[in-house]
Image (cartoon, rainbow, N blue to C red):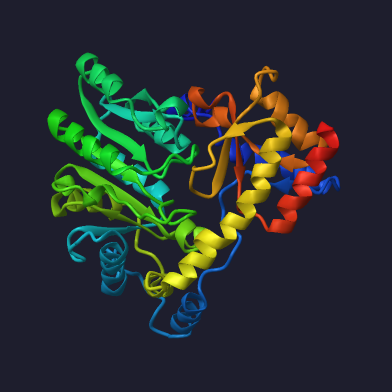
Length: 389
């Protein structure tokens, strides 16, 4: 009998991949499920972005293979974006690497820096892919805690204890503004992470796709002096530019790290379609008014209704959290978070996310996505009110 690779025993099918099959079946049965689970922006990119894609797609010479490093136009736009919004200087030729989304970047960076058996530090709660890809690639994964009473910031005393007890740590994954908790990026945290990386000769990777969503202050770990020597930052157009299906992101760090990551990437990918690259370059130059309307005003209106859902469910939440989700703690009277989320799914026909999928520190939490029209969120509220009261 043919058997799959043993690494498949280390991971399960991605929660949303599995759960969306169930939701699709419920919809096929006429249940009309409202999904407030996944962070896939439902709004379009800017008009000029779409126009540029169509323009380039009509060019007969635009359909060949593209350089893995990306077109100069895209890299230059990425450098302008970092200078304009973060006041970070990047060499477009050597310190930026376009990615087919941050998820692929997690794969490439892990392959470039981590040998089988090396240790990777992963936040709990945190993005599940940090954990799953580390396991698939043979790394040892050690969690560090994020807690509500610490503003979902790293506990550096715990991190120091981990380093004293754990040899061969290579990477630390961090993600601010934080997903799933909405914890804000803090310059003090970034400064301490940079110093931590230098003290222990490891690489810190900051995943930074949410800095524009409901957030007036745009921070980057690369703003810290010397950060490029020991840190890598991912950024993505999925959330900030309403382009999740386009699969455009970036990796920014020093030129040597970029060369190592490119060595991996060039053996896996063949470059993104030229039309997408040039359209993405246009999107990076969106004006401030576009970002305010789509990244702040729209999500702020939706957030008000998501807060009402949390209130009806008896959940507590931090009104100062940012990002495109609302993270809330379930009432003490509910024994298990899935008791709540499954009831909401099957009785109210609303799909929300249980926090345990992000780690054990999320077991008492739920996450509501703001990636749905206001009318849908209002209807979800109405349905939930019907089953709660």
